[in-house]
Length: 77
Image 1: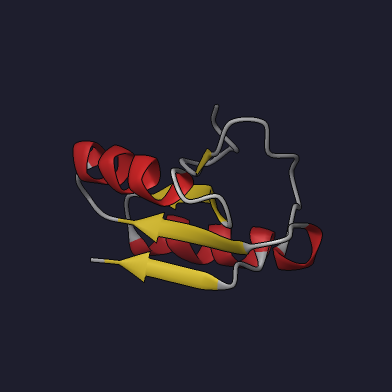
Image 2: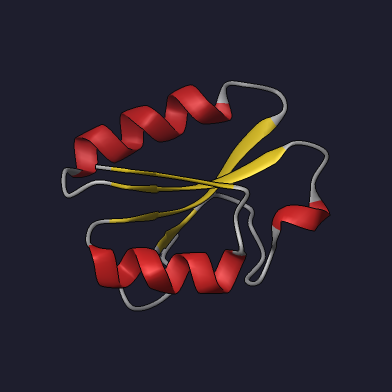
């Protein structure tokens, strides 16, 4: 699912979902390789108390995702 302007939003996430709306940590991942992003997303989402709400493939999209989702953690390459 795409959240607009190149920000890929995690499955089932409502726009504007932020850190305060879940029991665990919420994160945004950034890497310029889609395969790496999907692998990292799968690893993080496999943890019961963590959730990736967005991925980004460049710095501009990363900043957009951080402003939009206000994550607890950002992992970038």
